[in-house]
Length: 500
Ligand SMILES: Cc1cc2nc3c(=O)[nH]c(=O)nc-3n(C[C@H](O)[C@H](O)[C@H](O)COP(=O)(O)O)c2cc1C
Image (cartoon, rainbow, N blue to C red; front, top):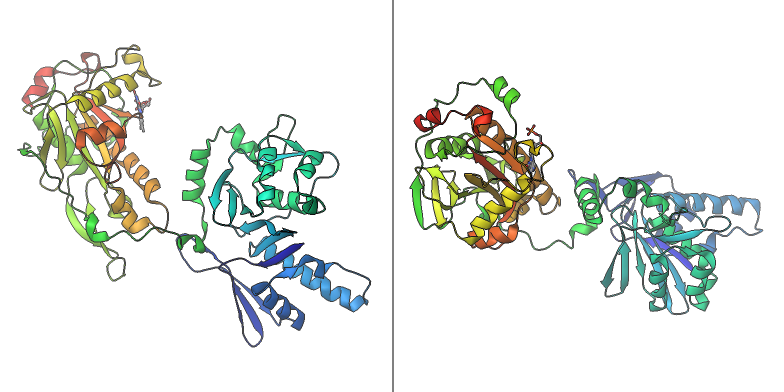
């Protein structure tokens, strides 16, 4: 038996001459739920809407028999409406056997395309991006690209999971179904294909729905992250399962760490600014080989000041209930949240002791957290090792990556982003965008100061946790950048650097 009913979050409001069906879908930016308005609904449509909101409607009700022509026309109109509801992701579909509900389709997007069983011989299998989650009422199957989740409620259907892991032909699939559901074989296949968790295989066993993602080399993790953070329409019912809201007060804009000692930085100077902005942009490049003459505290001070110092604390979205404090810095940050802090592994710097420091961007000073211990040395070595893997590492031969004078580690306070973006689901995506913004700022400022800059792809949150003594859930490292003085081949004049 195949049954339709409105999915969770669908509401029907009937007015005098029209009925409005509110869907559970809204855009991420604007939480107004999409609606469907039907003018002058017939009595039979009203009764259909009532049934769909209550006990559900059996598909058999719509099988056209040899009634009078007018009755057939009426049935057809209802059938067409049902298809509209289905396509708009409003209908929960349930196939039942002798043990009750067996397999269900629960839409998550307002864009369903009913797929029927392919004609002739076919092979079907799960998308390779599928994941299965146990729930109290069964196993939930979904993929980032699917338009609906599938719920296996009847345990006798669990063996089809194994069948659909590899490509499975009609007969094998049919045989895997319990006797009472075998007659519904076509409905079950249609439900799996329509949801997007399974597809029809090509000769190489790749399912049609995966082809482009597989050809482009998408990993399941990246595809899930991308779909989750870039889809415009969201299911507002999903929000109800969010963890408890994050307390904004706990993640203030200005962040101060407990430190062993505070080290003042020289006043930021203006003497390095002899390149115009456009020259800086033209000359910006990655330099991976460093001069034996270390950087000075003065240049490091300028580097930090022109990249990250706090200019001002501001109130964002004043007047709205979500008003929060933000920061202005030379670098841009989504929502002025500036949840990223800089930590420095200072290996060599004239005027500063080697050690692990936090940049206090409010007071423009360094807070010493520890000497240059084992985790810091390992972070410096990891930086040197990842230098060699760069595509344009002509300046260093493999195996000879140098430890930078200073390794800058960017660490994000996830909670600060979550305090504003938990419901949009964009926290981590925006953190990574902020990291990109900081990379470019560090590149440009380093270039203007005549430093050798190099952004890095590889970093270790474990090493950062050990060095900082902070739980990665509170502050997690999300980017690394190294600086030193450029090797002589890049026209560096050590005499000028010491004066500066
Ligand atoms: C996000 C990011 C990650 C990078 N990762 C590395 C890296 O791990 N190792 C490295 O030597 N260079 C790295 N680079 C530098 C790039 O390889 C470099 O920008 C690219 O080769 C182009 O050269 P250019 O910066 O001189 O224009 C990175 C740059 C960015 C922006």
